[in-house]
Image (cartoon, rainbow, N blue to C red):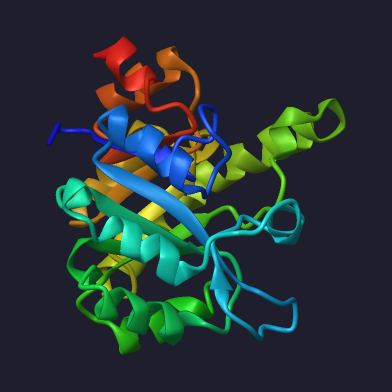
Length: 236
């Protein structure tokens, strides 16, 4: 495994539609160290099977994989050296995910991440052996991609960069989380150093620019999440 963890977002979302077997296999072929995928309850009221989808629009566009189908795929020998980032999109089904990871023998190479702060102590209590990541900021759409929201989003990011190192290191020191999953706009050398010195891990999402991948690697982040894991070979 490389010093930097190379992580495929939803598998390899720019190669094949994310959260599908084709996308996961494309990430594997590109040499990822970890694959990130999203988990939602089948119905908006929280009922039904757990499925692999980023949101309900995504789930409605096709028949999503069930969590069990995805985990059975990752339990195959070809995936034995690849870690899993299981991203919980909503609260309320934390223990069901933990039980499924254990049932497939995957808890030992899984990290559960979420933006939902209320979910963090539930996961920690249910599965102290599973790495736990807090994802920031809590957003459904990237405001940096729209000209109307880009300027205020950048201003908010500057403020967050000032306060986030302290919040993250306290959470790590208190054992509430093991890792911080941060949008690239929040990440700088100060945050990377603070998380590292606190004994935690720092994962950066979602980075599809080779120059940014190289810059983040240089400041010592733990891992980078990208839609196109072929970029890692281009920046090696």
